[in-house]
Image (cartoon, rainbow, N blue to C red; front, side, top):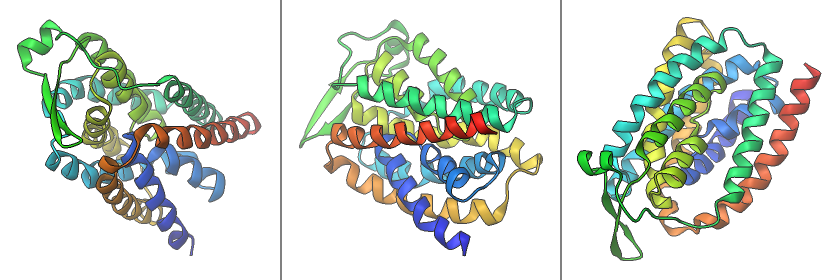
Length: 271
């Protein structure tokens, strides 16, 4: 019965994660722990599996729509994979209360960063690394093709290392860090950042999901319905994202994240 309830909730998580490029873990981990009472370590492990599903479900559609910058994704994954390996080693020494507090703090930080993101900024010149690696590209927007450049590549790599650490510790796609790296530091267009983030989060999660599996933290009765729901939701989100106002979506999601962050922090203090 619990698995049947998890399925529609996971669909919603996958839909929101796909739209915002954050990964469904931002939604599904608090739901599993606060509503279903699942141990946070099992929730983190199931979330990592669902993140791989999210990326698989959305990435193909975004690639077809020419929104994903594959070269940027491949370069930045160097930082996230090393970060994920570091994060898993750190997670073995953290208590459940620490995980709740860390997740609540991460959600609050994410809400603040999303609130500060007022407009779609673009780079005016390429960073030398971007020029040498050919990271600049173009994307379709409102019926026409828009050229864009890429800047601050080394800083973007550093942020992606942090994204990998948070992904492994908290079972999230760390999409907010990926969006900070690409949209904030490297000045990629908002839709390109979101699509490229969706493309990357599966690789980041895969780097640590195998380790959680070997430790016995992945429970099929939890991970299976969550992953299935995430796939459906991610596919739906990828289909409608090009037609929606990204800023309006952010405003709604900011409120949700603040409420959930407070609940996670309170649970961590009580644990």
